Amino acid sequence: MTNGFFEETKEQSLVKATIVAKYFWVWAKVIMSQVQGTGKKIAYMDLFAGQGRYQDGTKSTPLRVLEQAINDPEMRQVLVTFFNDKNGDNSQSLERAISELPDIDKLTYRPKVMNEEVGSEMVKMFEQMRLIPTLFFVDPWGYKGLSLQLVNAVIKDWACECIFFFNYNRINMGLNNQFVEEHMNALFGKERADALRSKLQTLSPGDRELTIVEELCKALNQTNDRYVLPFRFRDDRGTRTSHHLIFVSKHFRGYDIMKRVMAGESSKQEQGVASLEYSPADRRYPVLFEMARPLDDLEAMLLNDCAGRSITFKKLYETHSVGKPYIDSNYKQVLKKLEEAGAITAEKPGKKRRRGTFADDVVIIFSQKGC
Image (cartoon, rainbow, N blue to C red; front, side, top):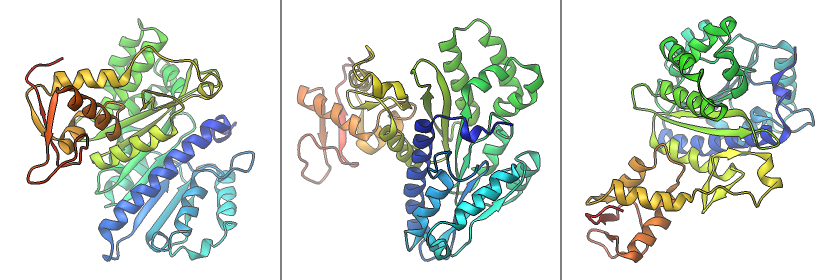
């Protein structure tokens, strides 16, 4: 059977691996600073790890994560890594690739490579375990093994977060395929999946995608205490979606860090606002643009949503940016413009503040009038 590990285009594979590796580095540094001196460990787990290298020899995510740890004296002492792939050839190839990494013996904990099926038994194991701070990466070929129950099980404990990659076209087709109904129900939840099947019948292809991703994000955050962030990959022509990378966290800080990482890997920006998607076509056709002006949209939203309010920049950013593509620099740029126009005033209680700057504790006072 063809291995999905080799099906993705080279550019998309590299962007995916870069996003995961960059986030892992920042996440690991943040968590290590909080458990420093306690003797506690952190972990990285890849449940569909693949062979370790792409066809052209480029290192995939497992090797990139391990190299980061090897080169960091503190991280290599506390990091525990688990790599799994049901395909025995893949897991053996990965073990060889790991053993060939320079200075692999500097890691206190030797990477563990497993050869297990990701299914109900593995989910039960995670549900019953108290996990150390762990970043999980789930990149299945298709959708088998990917489920709400799995995501819920792996992020339930402190500082545990999950990134998963899914083939949009397979999910789109699978929702109308009775032979994979069980897998679709496991991913969306049966009630939501049934409602989705009915809703999709009359939708255009573009609306189908928006609806499917929206419902998946809602399913992952049914209790409204999580942060879910999708990143889209388009095909080589830029006309169709191929995959989505979904990040799930229980903390705004993780959400904010990942949004910055994804923004940096986006192939297009409008007015400094990242598209949160990667399309090879954007690099070939740089003059193409959308009519929307995203920073103007943010300005209008702030004037409407915050009219008459006084709020610190930190609170504003943490509450207003969720579900939007904007990062803190976008907010500061718009607020500076609003201050120059007299639409807001700002002050730093008990301290001098330089006009046009917005530290976390700066209080922003919006006028009563909306836009």
